[in-house]
Image 1 (cartoon, rainbow, N blue to C red):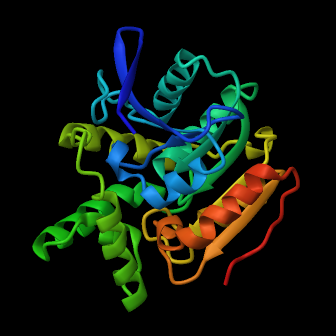
Image 2: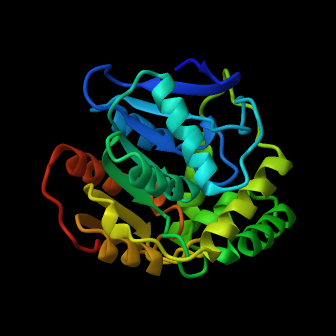
Length: 280
């Protein structure tokens, strides 16, 4: 799909749209240091088989203009401005990692805009271990550089033979697109996002019971970036939650287990009732 843009308050937001035009679109909210090309094509294409999918670069990321905001709350408000600029009045949100923080803020501040939430590899404000994301990121990135690997192989995947193989496959998939690639995320933008994540992890917990929307929570059983205990915490504290924990998977569990995650998430989006269970 071509990269398009929409201007909001003098700032250009880059985005791509996939799938059918009818129905409630699913807006993807991206992870730390990620641009349009970092979404797993198997997940984008899987969702787009049944839903309109919109992926975008938030302010200061990739091909979008402006500067990265200093807080998660500001990032969430920029995301809302982008959604409204597209003329959308109701969306489902799919937030991965940092994107899951934004999704929670959007659902609380703009409940009229949000239908359902898919929260993957993420956690609540004040969640266990979130203040250590920067340290884990820097250590794993340095290790990856020294071993000539993409940092996401260390950050997102388990170090078992299966996890290593899935990590290599994921890197191959996100490099399948060769034309119209997005601009790399700058080191300045990455550092600003890390400061915002630290502040999210350090702030007081919020009342997640106020998010009265159906929520699908997914993660790997061994998430080193946003510890998996946060996924259990989200599911316990939200009134209408579905939980999936994938075995032998890490922070990028939805990528590692995409063949299970995609149909389960699509089932959740198509049905009104939710369930609470664990995938072994």
